[in-house]
Length: 109
Image (cartoon, rainbow, N blue to C red; front, top):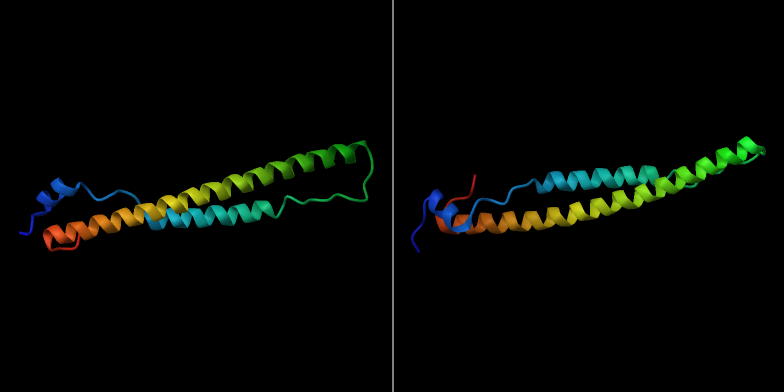
């Protein structure tokens, strides 16, 4: 098979898949780090304080802890999606680069 020019190769295989898989993985790791921090605050206990104000404060803490638990789950879910998409993107970029090199005899820049 004759080698192609850059333009011919792009016309055949299309442009390199866009995206930053490593950046996506870094963001997923950051989301998981944040989720761990939020998750550590979901078990809050307020003892040795009994009054109407104490009950109201405890209810607010319980509500905030439930919200934190939901946020932890959502952040971890988003991180999982990012990790999956980053892996898929990396594979597509690697396949594209291999095909480009096969067609042109050069590594893509």
